[in-house]
Length: 244
Image: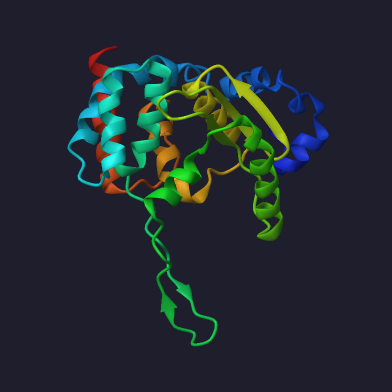
């Protein structure tokens, strides 16, 4: 879709994006942009799981509960394991360097408060224990975008305990797209960003750039990853290349 429209305008103009079949349309549009990249996350993710687990096992930022989740990967099935890994991924990826902002009263430049790990994780995906909470998430998202005049952005939804996922979705404004598994929810979210020309959520941008560059092998001039993120991307791409 090459038109210069907002996400809201796209959804209003094209009724086909407001039904479950829209998932196929987003895939097709992404494949036109990047014909060889559509299946790369699915095909490459499992190759890198041992490396990500090893990196997380040596990470000192994990709390006790997160260490238990990481250890549980030996005994649970892949879909749930992917939810756990993606929930811990922010520990390996530095957040964006905060820009300075000017105090209204003094005119002095100050640094914004650094995001907590929980805030970064919640910006990457939404974790619900009950599917009945979906409507509340939609309402809060609408209120926030209207209050701060933000662009509507897709975000993955994981339902159920991280050790036993029961459903996954992607939400975009008022639309809910059900997906077959955790990895597909992130894959669809990523492709929607490209198909509708919308930015990644700012607080989770480094996480999405990691997936974009390491797995889909897409480099854009605007990415500007940090040195630490570039290093991790290089590690993961090397693992993928070794097993290809």
